[in-house]
Length: 201
Image 1: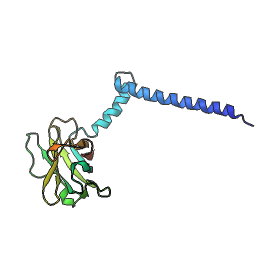
Image 2: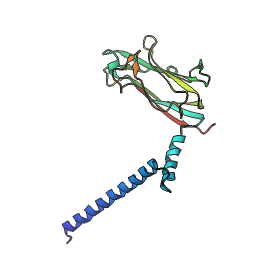
Image 3: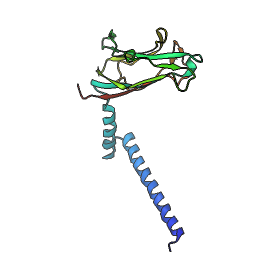
Image 4: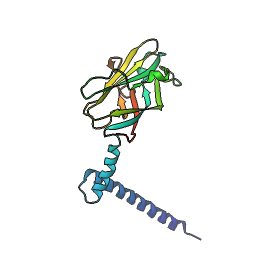
């Protein structure tokens, strides 16, 4: 008959060994990241980071989706209905904005949301509407968010930096101003992009 006390000791040793292994792996990763000149480890970790950064850093064509657009209820009156739409314009290296938008979500129908309605929040996504956009360093984009419900009201806009190190339409862009005023909910207004290179230069 086995001794439960002995079994407990084995289990305890196994847990300690697992914890030590995790700490070792984490420590090696941190060492390689913060000390890239460390023999063997530094170049290996740096290579992983560089590969991830290169995914959206070079000139070429990118498949872009708007995975989420959201505004906080606090920015509107109770019961207000909003039709969220987005237009995005490319800006050349000469600083001139193209007349035709690279994205105009109004082509894909309405997105009615209602302030205070959890079943119909003021949010939208076009994750199933990928578009291919060409980009090279020095070019930028202007994002405009509109409420098309009963008219044309610009809710927010954002222009990417012309010296951006990577493709600007990727990740999350927060809107610090809504309808021309400082946002009431600083974390509740944003647009989120998905972007991946197509392999075409």
